[in-house]
Image (spheres, rainbow, N blue to C red):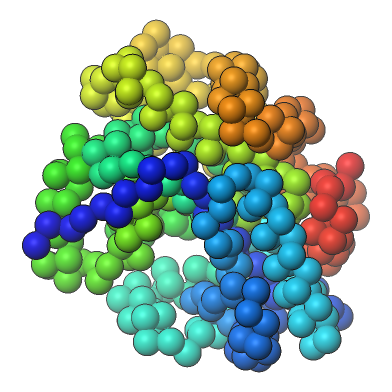
Length: 378
């Protein structure tokens, strides 16, 4: 039976944030998700769910009409979660990866789906202690969702570089701005999405994966971008978790503006499948540049076979999206992208702090404080 895309007439928003649970004394990850979720169940406005291991939880917003409404929802829920966690000696923070955790010590959350993932992926699932931000934007139909996904492939490096916050793994400097991106690439349904001509082709792909037991549901497709037919959205999953709400909302604004702008281009007939295919040819290299070098990376323009600095490309993009941000009333949030681009993402801050102090505990402390103060540490 063909799957149906639940239509969204407006570009509504939904955001998911994966949160680190941190022991107040050691600054290591704490396996306290079960007790925190139990207590959170009595707080109706706290939309908290489990994740694959017990050192993390996920906050979900309701369906929001604007970036500002997303901010209100996340701010309220982060404060509610912090209150519950602190009473148990737990602090909370957000970044793409905890800098010195040992994946061997992680405890799987007791849920049938997670045990199935562990059984299937073994070591890959064991080391899946990463933290991301997922942004849903409402889309009018399946064909448009696939078309937008095809165009967004070009902007994966922009989003990854701006959000990059996972330079360390197991107490080692990986040399990457985002090691989380590399971890997800290892899964058979992770990383860059396939090129699809239209919604029918996505349906055929999805039904093949379901029929052959390669996946159980859309949740098992870990692409950087995926159409989420149950919600009627395009879901952007490439971003690392971002330490401050202000930076988070800047990326949410950028994503919403991008989706609306691309949708507009399709309506005007100014985008074609040929453009999409050329972008797919260089997509792995461009994503690698962002994962490796962050905002210092260079991306390939497939139409002139030249490299351009990501910072310059981001600046050009912001100019194009300014009228869209004005119409969506998120120009203030979008403008903070300039600040991130100028000063660097969390990955840069973490690395500088570590090499100044030689203490991963100080890095974690800084992440905790940034979330509390809602502003990137200078």
